[in-house]
Length: 617
Image (cartoon, rainbow, N blue to C red):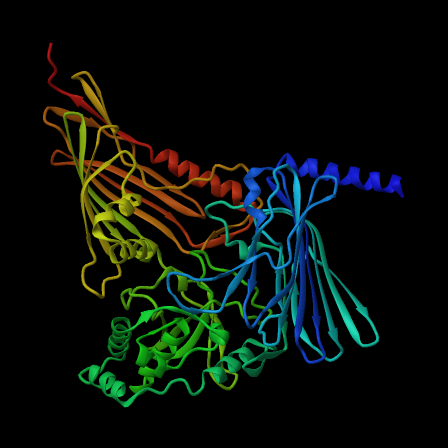
């Protein structure tokens, strides 16, 4: 036995040594052991261990365990072992603190975390954590993935024990092996995977949720508020429809307001726009998470009385107002988290959504409105574009479909810059027309930041090497889908003089982001186009002539780069365009995609050579 122990210990130490050379920490194991009781309740025993190799990973010594009335946690246990597998520290009973999951917009929240820290002064050390979670009402049994995306995981195991007659849908990635044990009164399902790699990232990588290995388990029969089914997406839509029934009534006073609001309008789109702006002007978004508030919305009358609501309540309110003037609109669920969409598996119905919006059919098309935003009616935010949504209808008519993607023009950043050069200083007047996500960022800066600190936040829009002198933000009329950023700036670093004979002026580059890594086994996700268009003019200084670069044109399956240079009336003009097309590309495209970016970036580094035609002898 002693010999076996030393063999085991030597294997552990060898494994630690291998990982410690390349990683700051590693997940030793992550287990979920779920039991479905005869009454259909869930008991989930969760356990994991993380080995920390150096201080760069000490953040993992802080443990946050989610806790809420609908999903209470208990039996919290934790201890620390050293490299010899000896227990050196133990979490004292109930010695954690409980923190509310408050955000800047939260009014009510019952989501909390049990938080504690088990840190050790000598490396490596391993933190072992276990706890139990119980749920009586649920819409998802589990969405099982590796514990931390940024860490490798040696072993992951999911076990589900169910009584006969309990049916569920499941999906598992190929890295998980599935086995089953049939016992007298129950079935044990076991998913197991080893040596899960960390999720590598680059700026064009998909959302980690889209590519992390996972097992998704949903019950065929829903146990939450009202009975329902997860057999098909239409079944899920029927269940949401029933939950929302009875929530669309409004006070008579508000019915009169909205009726008068559109009394002089015949166009349906104009009616929808006026009502959408009415919601924007008379309500505010605030997160509400109270018991079943994460799924069950507050009523339209609640919003009418209180003038606030979360995404679900504001969507119900907008639909209720539209119903009053006989405009059809549908409650719609979508995953909006992060700038990149979660490309979830559509073959298995699941509650893969975190946001509610409104779908409005108009003239054979469908527009998607987010009443939590303050954007223009015609603006299509990135967080609801090119991603799956569930449009909720009655009687098996709900449909899972993709929202439209944005065009290159929808997201294009256009820059018009007039330059002069004097005494070795490049002086520029910039006008940037921002659309897409840039519009969202700048509008947020204008709306949510005090004037005196606004200059700090707009620095991201200023070209490198320039010192900002003055700026203004022009949001134009309310219906505009773009915002203009106008500023003056100067640079000394972009002008290089050579005595009195000539000077080189660098042409400001486009913000083309390249990939510096050699190989990452991660696909490429351009979920919306990227487009930069520059129109630059340089006044040729008196007594100077200019040597122009050659025109450039680069095309590929991923995008294009174009640069044209010409002189007209003693002014040099530069017209440049860089575009990345929308698309999802496998890892076999990585090298050619990277080369297109690098070639475009290299080609964009250009300068003018101004020659003095009158020099002192």
